Length: 202
Image (cartoon, rainbow, N blue to C red; front, side, top):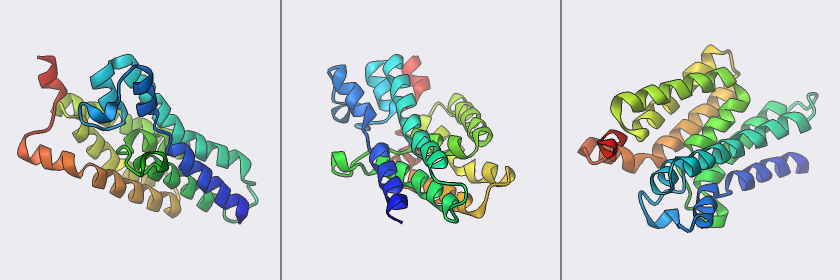
């Protein structure tokens, strides 16, 4: 039980690493004080350019993928609680990104980290979600719309892939948290005040 708890705690601590903030500071910018104030890849990209935005994205995805991947290789297959531990590791990584202890529990919205978690459980489901995200952003012009639509449908893809009820429950919990974190975006979308990439390019 101690080892299992350590895996879950480590997943939270890895997920809580604020890569966007760290990368921004290396570039001389506190991303919390400009743009949307978010530490995620979208705000970093807006403020510091595509290269650092993509770097932040990859780092945030990796901190969701690595804890689940590591636990999958370190927890014995014979363990009766193995899948439960993996699911909790994935959930802990996303919670860590959203509520990082290093930043007084004020973190990002969890989309990239959630993608990393789902990538560890089902690469094909993650690929479908990425394609859907890209399509939604291209059509609407809003990154938040892509995030909301792609996240909402990930439980469906996991179910179609035959994933277990535990994985589906984890997915629904993560989607709920992602949508809660996007409550301000949803409000701006309804008021027509959300920032759009299409307008920024014109």
